[in-house]
Image (cartoon, rainbow, N blue to C red):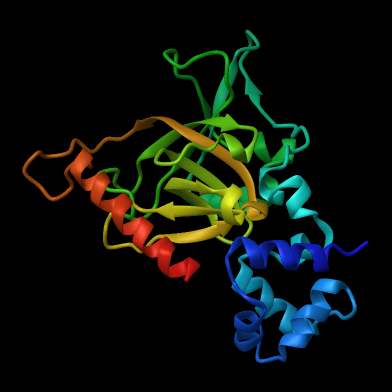
Length: 257
């Protein structure tokens, strides 16, 4: 049964948008919005897609998920995911390395034991034995002072709601591939994650929670590059992070507007 009518009414009121305002933005009569919310009519596909953009919701979610009753779809508990892991002769878990060249293949093969066995494996003795870890090689300079070629070791995060705003994660996503970013969690508000680069030259962007296939919280990194205190690749300071967060909130206000 379609949840469109109740979801439309709930999301519109949540964002403090009147029926008249929504009608103007969709270029339809106000009576059509009323008909949509009463279940007497349904929008055409093009109108539905524009409606989803305005309300920051996916088509599948607005049609089939009761948002008011259950909360945003992205924060729902995920089913148990079976991870393919590597172990040594003593049955201790190894860390599988996803190099830059393997990142594209990983999107299709991360659940395939045969594919995963072809990737390099190693062990770090100082990591906790309680979690499952994976390593990803960085490309690009969006997360300076970590330079291209740095290996980030992440601990597996089972549920999206466990993502803590301001921390860094490796995300495996349907649309963006494998990315390492500082994440701000707005899943309860609009079902999305806000991805921020530590390099201020890169603009932040959003991904929908449903697009995320795996999450790995950064726990360590391996690099052959020793940062020079006098160069431009300096570590992020608390002042830098504070300014970044203020900029992010400004961008979010623009997005919500």
